[in-house]
Length: 208
Image (cartoon, rainbow, N blue to C red; front, top):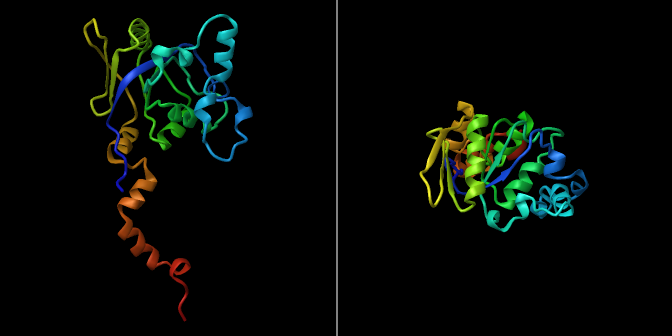
């Protein structure tokens, strides 16, 4: 098994508008009693989705055209609030493989990185343009290229729209080399791990 290297994410996108969307809105605290992350995808934005239905509308996560999307597009300070790793876990299990936003909570950003969910930032103008493009055409293909530092939206009936996205160099390198995937790195270097373990007295046993 090799460490998973992530340099590019492609697929349809789903917009979630609003600033300061906190982790309790992404995944409410009442669902955190489980001992695993299984089934968390069912509870993503569940209260916002219920509120939208009550108002006679549909949250984007309930709208059929966005089902199966792999790129989430958000506004500023996404993932603020409590430091629960369950929020990015729920999004990832729903199918999200990259997030494009104006800004992110630092802890949410780190928790996302740890599970291989890259978050890239872009200007307010570019995020708004991307949201508008995928709202007009939910079937538009969106490509987040971490290596090039770009995001491209390709609507079916228009010209592709490319703009710059950013992430810290060390985060980009971690995704490109697979360093974020610590379990994969251990398995990729299994012989070295075993050799090191054999030299450790608390693994190999003490000798007289």
